[in-house]
Image (cartoon, rainbow, N blue to C red; front, side, top):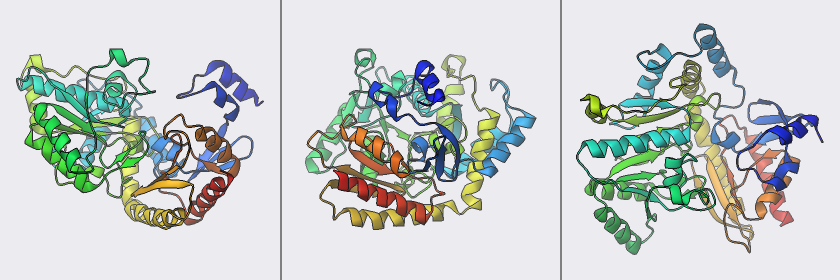
Length: 420
């Protein structure tokens, strides 16, 4: 066994790790463009953007240069009673990019904390507005992170099993698919007027890359609006072009009250997240001393991360990124058509650069499906970095992906299906 892996297994605790997966450990040596290179000589096409964070390709020289320049000037400064140019510039650019009514930016560290901030803001806002009880509503199959508040609004299951008795109560809604579903959704909203609804727009990521239509999104939002329910759009995964528009919320004319951003925010280069809200909300909180929003992080608005995020936004313009996204979506469309001829897959679904499908299995579809192990063994041995969601396989590539690389990944997937 590789000496570095031996030390890793002695000292390191990996996320979502199982003992049986220890023998699958690889050592990443370097990464460039759409590929990760390992110390044992493998060249892996990163078709999942390294947990959905890498956008413009690994080790992008423009992002690296901007981080370097910022590091020579100022790497970190307290963000209480201080500000700096990268944070202000990033806030201004994000506000101009996001839907109307999202006028203020609160910085934090990752997707989970962006959700925590949004929940705390929304609940405190309701209390300021005079509501005694504030019910939080969320969707079945949702995932919003692993801190306590984020866990509470996600689907209860294996991710929360040991902590469920410590989580606050949430009213779970099913994405409506028929008249009966819409009646149930509306009845739930009427029964919880004045509450807060958090959702992943269009694509429920870790829940299995489950997708619903823009029309469904808009109708759910409108019902919430009709019942005075605040909207939190969790765009941690869907933001920055993943669904075909800069933000999935753009598929509906109804703007959310809060928006959570992270993952692709810095192009995968640095940890950072943002929570956006309206000026009206901000002014209510600032109106008196007893309304102060008591939340902060040591690395709030870290200048290096701000520089990386600004560089990532630059690249959207410099490299015509939205055109790249449209091209990848077209490659997915063609491959999805090929997949329809396979008797081993079902529920083929697409949205922007996200393509997902379920492998037919005698076991229940889910994160612990035994096909997971087969995928984790087969794909790295065949030049692809792909981490499944149980028996759900998905492609969510960086925008640097070439047509040749896409074709190679598709061929590996078809070969894998032939082994089943």
